[in-house]
Picture (cartoon, helix red, strand yellow):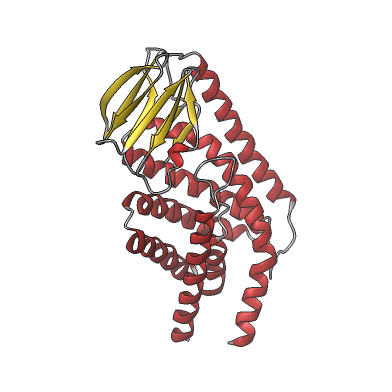
Length: 126
Length: 168
C-alpha cells in the first residue's frame, strides 16, 4: 500500500520546480540590475511616506519610532521593528537592488520606480 | 468510530501545532521566514488515515489556534491561504501516490503551492505586486525543503498508519 522509496518522478518533479524557480529568480535579478536607482521609497499602508537618497547615511524613524531604518554605505537595513518575528531585520537592500517588506506593519521599502524598472530581486518579509 | 476519529484528529492537530511552534523557534539561515514544514507530516498522515475533510479541519483549526494564542492577523492570513492551497494540491497529487510518486514528490509540490498561497495573501496584505519578487526564491527553497520533509514522511507515515490500524 505504501511507497517508502524515492521514485525517479519525485526527483524529476522536485528538480523541475527548483530549476523553474531559479530561472525566474535569475530573470528578476537581471531585470533589477537595469533598474538602478539612487533613491528609495518607503510605503506605509500603500502610501508613499518618504523618499530618501540611498547615498546619504543616516537613520530614519517611522510609526512613532517603532520602525527605524538605517542607510549606511548605500545599504539599507531595518534596525528596529515591532513586528512579531523581525524577519525584515535579517537582510539588507543596496543601491544595486533588493526590497524590504514588513508584512505585519504593512511597510514596503523599494527603489524609486523608473520607467524601465521591474520588481526587485531580494524581498524580505518580516 | 466517530469518537476514535475525533480523538485521532485532536492528536494529529496537537502534534502538528507543537511541531509548527518548534519550527518557528528555529529559523533557517538561507531565507528569512522559511520553515521545513514538518508540521504538515501530521496533516498528510491525517489525510491518509481519516480523509481529506479531517485533514482540512486540522489545517483550519491549527491556524485558528495560532490566531487565538498570538493574535497575529497577518500570520493567520498567510498560514490559512498557504495551508488551503497546499491541502488542495494534496487532493490532486495524492491520486498519483504509489502510481508514480512517493511522499517526496507530493510534499515538494505541496510546499510550492503553500508558498504561492502565502505570497498571494502577502500581496493582498501589502497591496503591492512587488511581493511576488520573493516567490521564485521561496519556491526553490520550499521545493527542496518539501522533498526533505517527504523523505521523513516516507519513513514515518506508513508506521503511524499501520500502528493506528492495528490498535483500532
